[in-house]
Length: 486
Image (tube, rainbow, N blue to C red; front, top):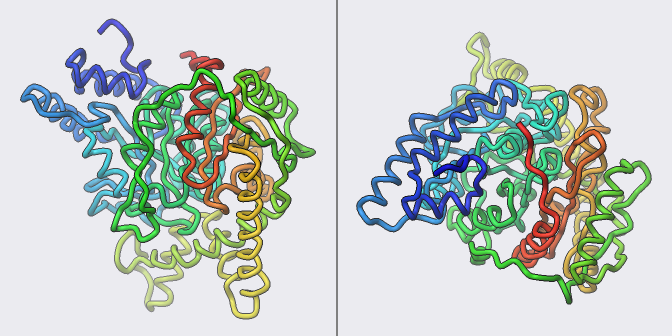
């Protein structure tokens, strides 16, 4: 092929591998060449599994030569966030406490990618245990934004977002607990999909907050996100919370218009303090939807103002319980200088966890403690229910909700590290969907005057991914996003 293979979509790459127009090994080598050139600056990966990936690619090519039927992601290079288990590969969650831990099994989403003949090229950087909004909390390195190396890629799935934006891979998996797919997608100018809670199995995802975590894809096109979801979605008996729902179809039909679609604008998402360039770009994107025939209607989600405070009670509470297992006894790092078991716990956890993880464990432990449980955790659960009711009422009037993904463009390294509350507010527009369990997606909708990406967030009711992806594809067709220049 004469075209640069790294410029092609996942859909197109799978087509040419299945047809024999290009081999899976050639596709992988093209992406590794780009990765090796850009990775010293971007620092998206914690582990690059080149030998394993080339072996997988050769197996795909051999399968085609023998006349075997190739999977939906035949030969497509994919990166995996390093909180998803990949058998035989180190899984650290970007934390010193899991340094050296080699996964004994595949996460269900990873196993399904392999079964679809995808080629897994490595594990991407993240905020430690997915706790952060900038990927500055990684214990190992800081991933940069491919659009501006002085700025963060967002978080916690910053490595996956940056890898896709830099065309090191056409697809990557991330996890989203409070915006960790959508916020970095907006910052890096790519598509990021948080499926409905239960749509994708969490088996093999190292838990942060079990009632909020969801696995989803990053891509450069909506069609690629739909293809990825069709592979990783669906019921999994290994995850009791996975829904008995078939994933949406892989082939995405792009509608010519959006006539009959009702789109809600939540007044609580256009607030004082939002960056003017963000608001201008998002309102312009809404006008594009109107121009495609959608009806635009104001809606209210009145409990949105409590979203951040509710989230930062519930998520740390679940984290304090989930992270109790990391004690240095069964796996991961262990301090061998301790003289007692209690001292071993203190030294292992004190030295193994970073500052943000410790902060959230302490917040959660406090909220769950005797005398405070009802005042904080139980009350937060009741407010969470009210937010879910808000969405249900809104979706009785509209089909989708449109709003900003983030309140600001990508910020500079160090700009918010000394102010945790300011960092937490980066997810003010994404958190509500996690609390309610809705599907939501970020799609690029413009650039700032400085050339930084901005994201439009579209939200559907639970299991509304088909409608969500269809509308996003119609928007993308008339407002294609400019490719990142080398």
